[in-house]
Length: 434
Image (cartoon, rainbow, N blue to C red; front, side):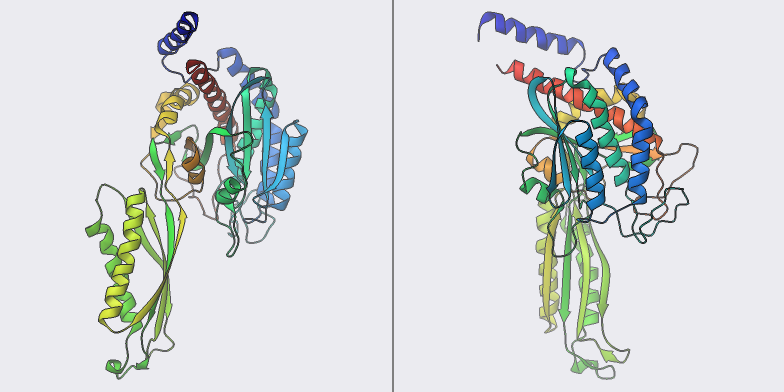
């Protein structure tokens, strides 16, 4: 490295140290321009959100939602690809200056829930509703594209806007979601260096919550069938009671959490469905039950699967029964890259105020954004959407879920700052390594 280059790198590092970090790169003038652009596009983005909310579509069936998103991105002059992972859409915004590419992702699918919220834009699709806020996510990311499209002169690099179907899981027998998006190259051409995502959360509007490291759990599913022997209820000794054995198994697998795992590393096993037997006076020949396993670590994930099968095998073998076990691994734990989280924290403080940024304990729900984070550094946060005047609001996946629409403008502002600051950091790193 030449002497002059050394001094340039030292100067940049000193400047970043004096200003606190590599985090905040958006100056007051740029911030004001962002606010003006949000205000200019606000009515249109709200209109889009309400249209999406009125016309929800289930996983891998988001045909009209996809068309709407693609048409809006094309109108902005972005490079647009459609049909990724069936109904996914990707828009690439090229900055006026060369540099790295970062991504931002929204999920676009709805849930099979009948909406009970009495709003003028309630769902027109019977039994289908945006009860998880994906219409808000889509609107925020689309709004971010609208705003940053007018900032190409400030952008050193590219921003990839990823609209992903089937976050709630593809239909049985189909592929989909983040896994298929990645398989079909969404993080390539150009390669994405970091990715951002968010989820609406039933906390006060204006609040932001996140954690460094694990923030959501893995989610695996199991289906176990206990095979016994039928007999008359008056002569249970002539049969092998599958209901009694299933009961023993269900109770015993809960001891995996309390006796086989480190109590400081959370995990949850839940059995949510059970069926078996034919009549009250007949010993059941077969019982089938289904459940989920949620962990924050891959270590526990592997342990639990092993112990479940050992317990089922041991109990059925002791009573002369048999079993079948189907275990499907789902999404891994969602992991916020610690260094990226550290870099982005000052940005969040700058936008919503340090007093409104909260640490959150890892949640045992799951999100397939985690699959992107296995490939590249990712940052994911929760955005409060509860009207502060209300004491509480209905939770996610409720037919009464009704987020405050003012969260859309705030979400756009946060994402604009995060993306611009992240690009600035990526470019500074490139200078520092030359």
